[in-house]
Image: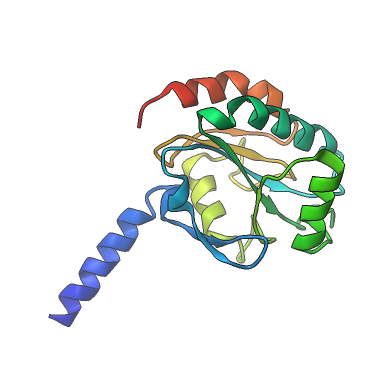
Length: 179
């Protein structure tokens, strides 16, 4: 009987992990956050770094996108990462203050994670599995963006050089789609 219960748990867990909504991550304050709370929302999940050359344009444009589309269900989930050139050495509190002070913007900020390698966060393993990259699936630099539909599945992956404003058509299409 116990093995049946374990089997049920494993199947239930596997089904829950079939979308981003099945993952639990830690927010910038260290609190567990179940991404199921974003069910029905369109998400931009992005690895960020405060000292990257893409920082100013990305944060400015993410704020502009949220100013227009948040009411329709768009959210930006920012995951600091220090794997690329050591460009995110700060702690989460400093990162949050930097983004708020400089850009007047408060994305949903999470704890610093690895996006590649053996210690890659399970969420990022899932994202890369859903939409691999050009030539390799690894995240190549800061500000790689994943557009996730209301159903929790990756619609499209955008390179670090793609500016958020250039995602508008895809965002609008995702916001119009039904679950």
